[in-house]
Amino acid sequence: MNQIVMITGASSGIGKETAKRLLARHFRVYAVARRLEAMEDLRTLGAEVLHMDVTNEASVYRTMEILLQKEGRIDILINNAGFGSTGSLEEVPLPEAQGQFDVNVFGLMRVTQAALPAMRAQGAGRIINLSSVGGQFATPLSGWYNATKFCVEALSDSLRREVSSFGIKVILIEPGGINTGWPVDAALNAQRNSGHGAYSPMVGRFVKNLRTYEHKLSDPSVVADLIEKAIRSPRPSTRYVGGFGARPLLFLRRLLPPKWMDYIVRTQFG
Ligand SMILES: NC(=O)c1ccc[n+]([C@@H]2O[C@H](COP(=O)([O-])OP(=O)(O)OC[C@H]3O[C@@H](n4cnc5c(N)ncnc54)[C@H](OP(=O)(O)O)[C@@H]3O)[C@@H](O)[C@H]2O)c1
Image (cartoon, rainbow, N blue to C red; front, side, top):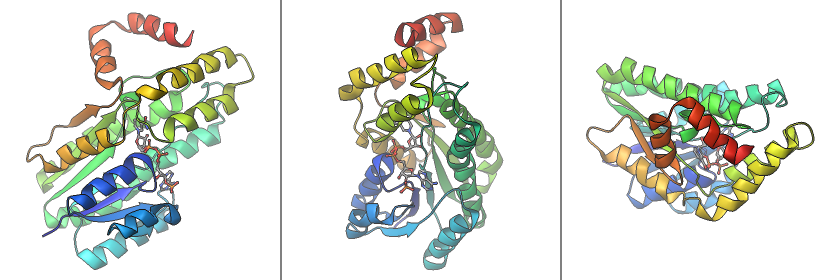
């Protein structure tokens, strides 16, 4: 029997790449996002393509219900939808920060809450949450994004311990720099929010760094590999790490005292 998987944020980047990978492996893929037209290629490849705005409760439950009516079960939920609103903590408008929490944290939990009753009834399921190395280590100009991913880490750890007795596994994916629209959006947002005041020199270096490392960013297939591992392993790890810079950064963070990490960050951001 083909496993039933829902992927949020499947209209671009990591979500789309993962959807393609799982379709090629004969999973039954429900690809969901707001931009249906951007998922036409997935429909052609055999995905069920549905609208979902993770910030809208009715939209989340309606779409989950369509899947459950058709399939009667959901084996794997991949919570991938997310974005990075950047800028200094002093300047990012709080409604923008709240909007990011609504997608990256509450959106993830809305979809999770909608899937859990079916998974509990089945006595099985996997929930795979896209965090980031930024969920382990916070950097200047990404504070709100980091805060959302730190939340995803905490919620995932707590949920894993709550639902393991129901046969449900909760797994975190922690990518480093991946070549999607994300880094471009991060640069634009930082310039919009903080490119003209006291933090503009820092933003200049942030954008310069993004450009310098652009060609080193990993292909989204690197994250699809991690997700596939998390799906296939009979006893999955709690976390899978990969992509540009992820392992060295986490290694240094474990090894060095915070003040040394501050120094290293200062060499990059000023
Ligand atoms: N790229 C990186 O370097 C990197 C590194 C670490 C972690 N990540 C994480 O990986 C995940 C995917 O990011 P990506 O790099 O692939 O970015 P991306 O190409 O910008 O994709 C983000 C996806 O999220 C969806 N989305 C945004 N708001 C939504 C909403 N309200 N409802 C439903 N879907 C929504 C978008 O679809 P619609 O606009 O069509 O709704 C889009 O498909 C994110 O959680 C991100 O934080 C990325």
